[in-house]
Length: 198
Image 1 (cartoon, rainbow, N blue to C red):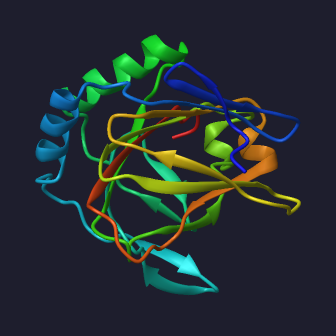
Image 2 (tube, rainbow, N blue to C red; image 1 turned 90 degrees about the vertical axis):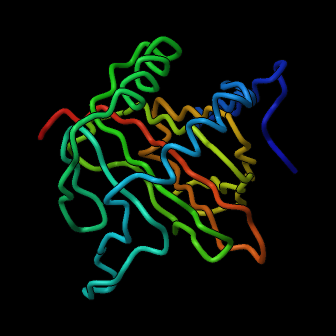
């Protein structure tokens, strides 16, 4: 059962353990196609290293960071300077949320084998109750959301041009993932954060 409720193109889920909103069609098809084509050719996008059970492994997706440096998956990653396109996207997200973003993570999910495991964006550099924004471009993927204490997960279908906003206590009480699937078209996500200690 999908626990989001419809509000026009916007689906909202809010409870004692999450405050999440998904707006479908936040960007036009023409804009998403142009952004996807530009970002998929980004120089320097590669599989970053992460620590898993004390071992260095490659993340199962391509990524590159912009703006403020940000520590996650047991490593601090070097960021590239902002591009005009990402500055525009961050400013658009700021207009939507009222939050000033100073870090962008661009990730390319090449096919259904690319994924991200259960995690929360709860690093100290993000402060308490951070607002995390993710813009989806390209093929649809399903994100799962569940309480940290366990329980049934809620599916969130991320579609081309959609805007996902996670705010409030979401990162402290919930986790999210994008699991592997049998088949998936290429997808790019642009995740925007405000890093307060860098």
